[in-house]
Image (cartoon, chains in turn cyan, red):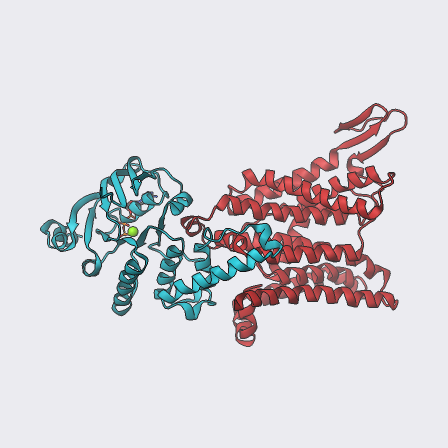
Length: 254
Length: 351
Ligand SMILES: Nc1ncnc2c1ncn2[C@@H]1O[C@H](COP(=O)(O)OP(=O)(O)OP(=O)(O)O)[C@@H](O)[C@H]1O
Ligand SMILES: [Mg+2]
């Protein structure tokens, strides 16, 4: 049997009268790089917020590895195996780059507060292990040189990468990236796309990403879902979706 | 690896300053160079520094504005003083009695912190400040109104004064408070409490617990997204902070023989005074809290000795407050400091 890693069934949510996501279905296989696209206000970020328990769906179900996680709280969903980044970057700005990633490792190294207060050997052991693991992750994103820098002092592009590193530190099975290339110049974007592909291969990760720019998405995603006014406009292999007249119309009509 | 060393260094410097202060004062005292007025300031300096450090955990590291610190001090003071007064006639050695009093005051304040934290920590920003302020005032006012006495018929508690039957004793006498509290708070003990507090807070802040607490301050939504249990860490920070405020209360109570729940000691103005220490010392800077508390507590007292000028002491005090505030927070001053102390500042972010 071949169970999809993520299966979303008939997911809907209304804000007052607005049906921001309407009867949304999605199925992602393990190891896929999947794209979610659509014009402004289509409901893409809302799908992420539903998947991560920020909003409770009015209807529908979310299955991760066949397990129903609908209605789980945000912190539970992270432990279930979904990690995300945010469209408008959300870093721990007054903490160092290293500490941002170490926060992602919070549950992997669960020594207790009393262990820290008494500085028992376990504290030093786990902190050292955390430092090493965090540095490894930072290296993947070429941020190891800035480990001691405050997150808010990083240039924009690196902040986006740090957010991905922090999400990966929680050891997810599914990574959600909300417009990771927003605000980047074409060079940075190209580099980021390479990194995303690298992450998928190195960590054997499944990635669902939102992107505004269809050209970018065309470069790295294997499959796409196009959202428009909260509804699925088209779903399928990237090439076919992008050449679909309806999709083109939705974008030009924007 | 290097990071562990750096935070440890910060910690050692702060504790070093405190120990050095103790040594200098002791030498001055032994050589007869300390006025008795100054001696009287030593214990309060230690406990207000301790109070500031503990409040900093909530205000600076958790990022919540709490104005109820004096209320927790009040709880710690009364619970411990009650114990000490009750045990005064027993054969228990004074040292042990005070040690138990410290534990009781700390534990009772921790319990109050925990219980009050449950409803209060759901609130944010201004609401949290107002509600904690109200809680502090309620605690203080209740303790100022209680009459607790023990006589042949047993223990009585009331909000009105009552006569005792036969051989009896008023333990809490309404607004007159608790009388005959043994004055067990000594400079050495107050200093040790401060040092232990510093170690606890430093060790907590520089651990996964401290990072989790700071992540809530920096970005709550992101913290949740990586699985940080917001409620748990908020409660933890708030309870630890309240517990230490309770310890401060114990030191306070055993530094005067008559303990009253007066506004001068436990009112919201005291909470705000401690908050001023935290803010002026630099929010999130542990060492800053200690130094600011010590200097700002001692300053108005010292200004008393200025002869004619002493009429202006509150004016001088205010001017100094404003100057320190500008030095710490005005953008121009910060930029200037950044340029001049660039390397130093980088390390300071860890403290
Ligand atoms: N909490 C909320 N309350 C009310 N309306 C909301 C809420 N969140 C989202 N919406 C609405 O839902 C719709 C979809 O928003 P969403 O942020 O998901 O769009 P998006 O596809 O991510 O757009 P963009 O490309 O601009 O990021 C919008 O009309 C938005 O105003
Ligand atoms: Mg969006």
